[in-house]
Length: 398
Image (cartoon, rainbow, N blue to C red; front, side):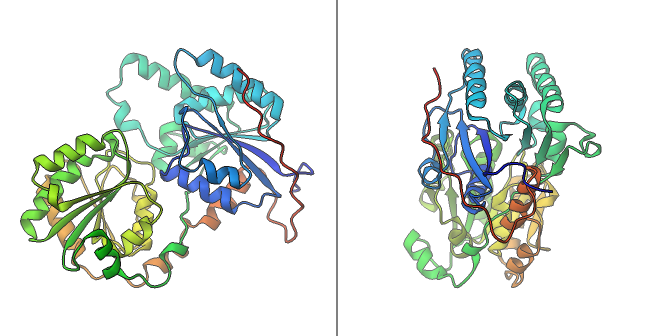
């Protein structure tokens, strides 16, 4: 296969906002690592506010274009998107907005974009079971649009693929699994756990139960607090470490205080040193999510050799290192989860965890190769072409 155009392939990613979250962090790794002589990426975001990664994206030469999306403003959004695609002539529209990808890809097809990709990063089937008739109709319509308008589709896991593309998705050659890889460099070298713990006010002999994720309903922080309370009955020196931000943070803080865990709990904002926290500050990571696609924090925990206790709502594809991941049903009481967390925390960490991640399909190198293949690019050449000069970012039309 030969690259069909003289300059770099131009890709527009469509998503809510470029904050520090799983899929967004993976996209940042792709932006940092893809050869700009082969791929130029822009980002159209819906949130109407700046994202944590916006400044770095712009330093990398990517444009971040804002188009706030509301129900009342949907016709105007569609028109603005169509005008943008007609003006900029992107080669690829890569949509990360799950069901709403049906709309973005319909507009992309009308604008003549040749490669239109829907990317499923989550499995929302459990949440959608109790949906209203109107919501079920919307879900059915959007999935039909995705199947009709997409030239290809990517899923971070098998459940995520079934959720967006349908039960028979594996029989359609357009759809494929592309695991979101993680960077492993931050897990290499020495880690001064004692100094790291001291900087956080944690003693060396304290048992630290960790959670990394946004404060949103599906992450199930209320259950994390219950498990921590039960664990405190089993171990005299338990600390709870919660890393992340989100709309439910104040509510979770109230639950922590009501449970008596206030003095034992640390709330840390979303931060870039999560690998160090996993290596040196935490003893076990808890992920009782009500649903997930494939949580990257679970892969990062294994790269750090950190034991992981996870709900059975999470795809088993996340388990890479034998014996390091334990699945439990959410129906089991918090006391059972606490006993399992304690048992996991007391096991020695495997010495080969990082090596197993390097040999897995969850590396950034595997992700980049799969993404280039999805974009229709030829295998990487030894001497890439010079990058085409970037144009200034024009404002979106009103």
